[in-house]
Length: 249
Length: 314
Image (spheres, rainbow over the protein chains, first blue to last red):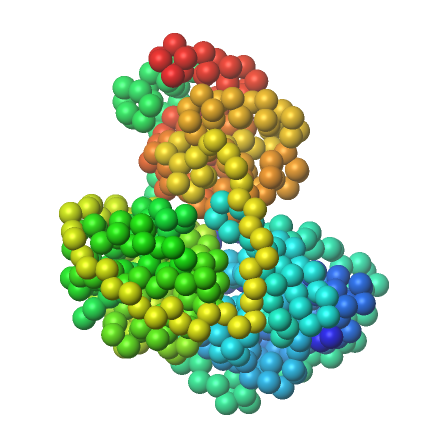
């Protein structure tokens, strides 16, 4: 079985995003970039499927700037087999990404596409669902457990208030939530091995996909800052203030 | 311009996230229809018909829609989309699951997690876990929008719209519901609670977390939350996690105990009305967003807080 995993190069989750003074976006110059954390979980799941003998071939795809090759390399060091970079200097919207991925799927014919549930930059939580719709495939989003048996996947999903388990026919799109697994750190020998693995570089035009944005970003602003409040001396003081001043008790 | 709001409901009860989405929809148009899709939805459809300013309620009732499968919703809503200029639904796990499928099928962008409707084409939405707000203008003729319900007020009752049955659509061909395991708790749901008590890594163990946080939450009728550090350390289950990678909450009162206030946590709670922080480190970043800070060891502060609450009639 062939698994396609998608990865996005995003701001490192431990770095605070800062809005540019001219409000055109978030300042990413000289900021540490990493693999989107949810994508890392998707890669880990694909590699585990390979280790279990369920998957035979794990292909990593990224759509992004030339530096996204590093992100693909990280996935290869974790255990994926080869990579495809669809190079794009703009940050395409989820619909455009889904269209590119649909074209990659047509070429690669995977049985399963594993993705992160959302990227922590745009926070759209849409690309996986869009890809599934464009392919007319079933989907299982926000996965916390995945079991593959034959041509079916049984997926436990994190939903509001609890868990839901679905069975989907393969091929399908599964998006990873936080609890699915804990991604490994790549070992040094595997990092060395990953350097020899193949990464094909393409463009959206190679796939004949129009990635023109549908949304125009008018501005990116900083949310209203919260003022630091006061320090209270005792718990009793706190309760009095919450009751009489804040009115929340 | 007509707008379709897809209702959020469970077990025949309409969730107030629906009324909140109606409030967002009112900024787009006065012609608002509500779609209530599922199995045995009559009660929820009747509740939707009472929301003020609603034109009509569409009720799609079938077993195929009963489990909220995204593929089944897609088949239904894409069929109805011709009559509407915008389709809105709350960004619950249900809405987040099906809405992008509808957008993709209609070949339009989805505008996710909207916190402000500026005009019929312009919306504000959080990006980077709420560390930035993006104002976007859509050039699509039809719009698919998910709405962050916590920032909108619920539209009040006062209407008596008609309820019209619509065909339920083709259902999901390749997805089957297996089971559901809902957390049974006497506490309110984290995302909807008026008060949230959260514990951090300072608790040191799962036993200590339960010993300290649970009784305080129960005394206040609050939901329990946790920082990612506490969840990663195994002190609290993952679904307690408040933050960028967990739940975004905006209760009236948020009490952070032994939480330092990492960016990732602040992203999930900084829209709370009143924030209280208890931490023995006076320099902890959590104090920069807290309305009331108490610099103290939680081991003494929490019992004192509970005594003070009881003395105040809690």
